[in-house]
Each structure stands twice: as C-alpha cells, then as structure tokens.
Amino acid sequence: MRQITLPLTDIDLSKFVFGTANIIRAGTYKQRCYLLEEAVSQGFSHFDTAPYYGFGMAERDLAPVLKRNPSLTFTTKVGLYPPGNDSQSFYQIMGRKLIGRLVTPLSRPSIDFTIDRARVSLEGSLRRTGRETIDIYLLHEPHLQLLNVDEWRIWMEKCVAAGKIGTFGIAADSQNLEPFLQNANTLCPIVQTLDSLEMRQADVLKRYGRPFQITYGYISGSKKAGSANSIATVLEMAIGRNPHGAIVVSTTKPHRIAQYRSVAERLS
Image (cartoon, rainbow, N blue to C red; front, side, top):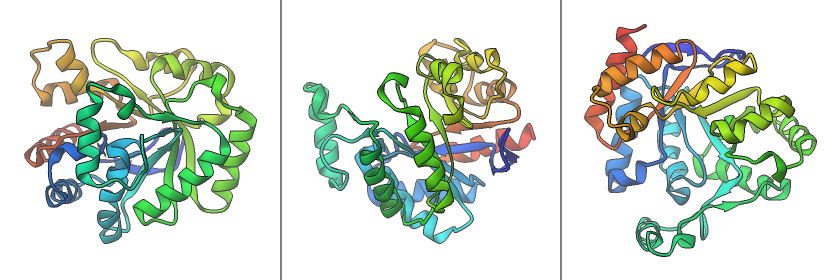
C-alpha cells in the first residue's frame, strides 16, 4: 500500500485508511477480526474509528489488532457517543440498532461537546483501543455554536503535551465544517470531511486555501447517485480529487481489501 505524508503535517499513513463505521455488520467477532487483519496484511497502516461506531464495539475490535501491530496508527473521535453505555454486547447492540429503525432515539447518538464529557471519552477510547496515545483525535461532526473554541483548543493542546493524543482536528461535513474554517481555524489543523465525485463537497476547503487531508464517501456517494462506474474506477477518480491526502474506505467483505490496495499501488 502506498504511504503518504498527510498535508500540513509530518504524519505518515497509508493512502487508503480503513474505516470501521460499519464493521459490526461483518458478522461475528472472529469475522470482524479477520477483516481487520486482512486490511493490515494488504498494507493499511491507519484505521478510522469513533466511540459511536458500533456503539463502542469498533474501538474494542481494533484493540487486539493494534496490540499485535504496534506500528499501526489510528484516528478516533469525540463529541458523538453511543446510546446506552459503551460496553454493550454484540447482541445488545444489534438489538438496539434493529429496534432503533422503528424507535429512532434508541440508536441515535448522544451529542455532548463539554470538556468534562470529553475527558471521560478520551480515557474510554484509550482503554478500549489499548493504546497510550491516540494518533489523531477529531471532534465528531461538531456545531460551532455548541462548543467553546478556546476551551477546546487549550484542552487539546494539553492532551498533546501529556502524550495522550498526537494531534487533533475536525471530522465534519461541509456544512458543519465551514464555520470552523471561517472562525476557528485553531481547532482544525487536521480536517476529515465528506466528499464525492458528484457533489464535490470538499471543495469548501479550496475556498479557504486548505489542502485535502482526509476525505471519505466516494463509493457510497457514487452508489447513491446511481453511477455505473466500478469501485476501482470510483477510487481512481477519488485519488484524482485528493491526490496528496488520505482517503477513508471501508468494507465488510475481505476480498474487497486487496482490490483497494491494487488501486492504490497502480496509481502510486
């Protein structure tokens, strides 16, 4: 897998980042572990997760993989939390997700951008992943009006100084991201944002002189738009959109991972 240095940073990671938002759909614990190990074997060196993904399960699934592969790096997030607690069993989580289709509050994330809640979340993410440091720590779909920018910046910088996080930034779609680019750039040295070949949402970065760093959403965006392009073609075009940064991809099918690697190698 091609390795890149993330623009505006000294962080090295794989061109394609493996996303864990839907990993719980891969099946049993054994199947999920196999999927993650296959990603490692195909050269993915960075993983994207969050407390809300799998209602805590995604971070826990990553722990043994991170332990066996100390050179791997990962992103996790803060601000969106799973309904219920973060130690639910697989069957509790699946039951909540299933019933949540009818009773949406049961699966809707809890939103809290207070520093007190963030402190608890940070320690929880460190515990679940089994790491002493989170490489990239991102505010998860924040709304500028919901947080105190200076308070968050000071807290994040203290976490960096303490070695609990490597660096920090924002994970948000263009609508939520733009106010930060306008008014709170100190909170987003790293930006992870939704993009697609059809809507080109990440062009908001260009308006503020920012490079594409981490983008995601290309395959799902093309499917939603009814595109006839193959997955390989979509990813090739995604690299054209984001030639220097990293692109988050995900799958629940192990055979897809080699295909992703092949695209990254061919265009390196």
